[in-house]
Length: 603
Image 1 (cartoon, rainbow, N blue to C red):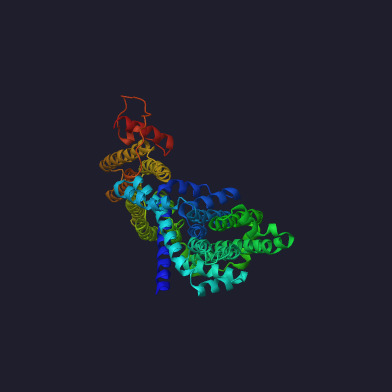
Image 2: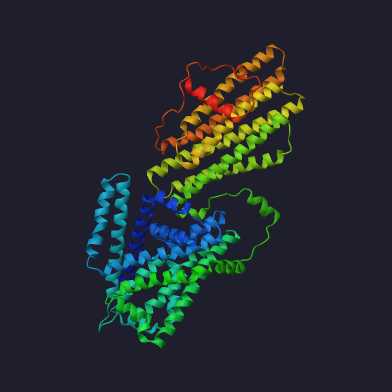
């Protein structure tokens, strides 16, 4: 009965340890959210930058598996090449060793103080707000890790008194069996940190008669197995992904397999040269009487040396992965389906919400570009009555509708994760931005239908009417450019420009309507074509409104920037009718810039 209780306490301690690890990782990620995004934005073909990125992100989120799964997601979305993924995966293996180093601290006299951090952090979380509460949860997570370790250590003391357990562990001396044990347990727990913590506990517990429940040499082989077992998570994540994503998970496996092979050679050959070169000998010499630190240091040394040795062969690893996972020819149905997939986001990236949010922003921008492209095609239909791109327009409209539904669902999934209050407001604003962008596509469709009416009823616009529409279109284009630049940068610095162009579009809307009525009175156009003209102008004005709404959606989570007006005082300016401003007007952007200044002066 005592043995059963000890085993239950062991699992309870393991669960507490994993909860503490998650608390620490999640809150560290929330606190360092923007810095985490900056790390991924700096990903390049520079191998050392890739290693630093992988190590840094894994150190923050406390899981090499999560980092590798993210990398698989990025490769699947086409945002990262295999070459870039390889160096990040190497870095992730180094970053994950920090968890073992934290766990090894239990052997120090400061463990009671580290355990008490669970209480200190809890009070900070209860009485603090926003960032202070997150810091409190982070501190509490560290404390809970050591509470879990304490539970495991205490329960292991009881288990170690069992002669059956002692004999079982003593008989497990075969290096490959020990590696298999490490692989299997890591695959089951889906966490190298969990298996490493149990391993450190086993090696830290003494048995009657002296010695540890498990020797350092045995622990070294188990650690090698743990490093291979951690690849299982990434392999599972690649199921259903594209070919390159599967290759990224294979690269992770190859890295750890080759690294293990290198160390097995060192472990078996070194003692033949000199006993002092044996791995367990110099680890015990360098860190005497601290088994937990010896294991943690071996874990770190393994990954650093493996990275240094294999770094020059990243190209070879990529080629080998390419040979193992062959490219499959896509069927026609699969090629069509690809058109309705995300450009940037992937379900796997949800494991790190702050990164998923960054990718969602990129996807919203991509959706906006699709709507703008359809608006351009629609306007070309009006000015040239050219319908050659009608099929392209319809396919793009279907994709816009697809993104409208799917991006909203993806935003909901992110909102269910543990995110900061600022990120919650950002996601809430995305619902509106996505809806506004979808409406732009609908109004572009209305303009296309108006062009078709001109053809069906054999109508046309005067050259003056076409020039007026071009001027208004140019103002909408400038508004869009400023909105997208601001939205991508998460900045309100272009507020003056956005407001100016939006006001200019409103001015054009009024002037074009007045000019149209004047042409009707002068019999310069028919009432049928006039109605279509007014419908087009109205749709363009609404498109401008929705683009500006996308900019305004940032008000809730982006701090306003005070900008001095850069407009000269010109009291003689006035809002003249469009036709009186320039009868031979063109769509030159410099003319719009001048008009924006005039609108700003008279606001």
